[in-house]
Image 1 (cartoon, one colour):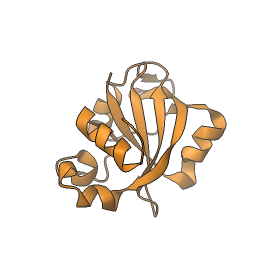
Image 2 (tube, one colour):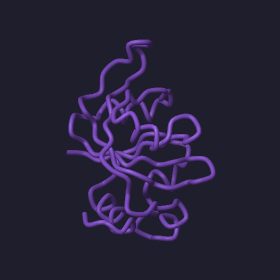
Image 3 (cartoon, rainbow, N blue to C red):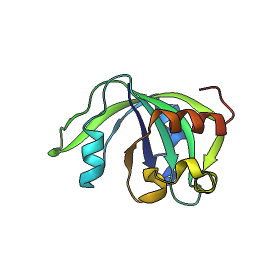
Length: 135
């Protein structure tokens, strides 16, 4: 199973909205590299939800309910259904990640505008530890 980081503008649709709705279609991605990543999402994959904007922090966990599929509104785009899992014990800020040498090559640090990116297993476990959780 893979892990992904999904960036969201909390003013548009944030983790609190996902918590309320319990499930949503993850859409609105147009960047070619982000779409390539999104197209690899499979049922059961874990997702870290990152708030962009002023917050700049990983705030919660979600799960892919199913595999990625063509966007019903535009077949050139890809979407998937996402379900709420839980909030992290404490948010993990971009500043914390940038200060940690383990994340030097992580896409969030190197390509901060990319909205969907894979999270290698060792970094996923480290993020959970930074959030005060057990991997």
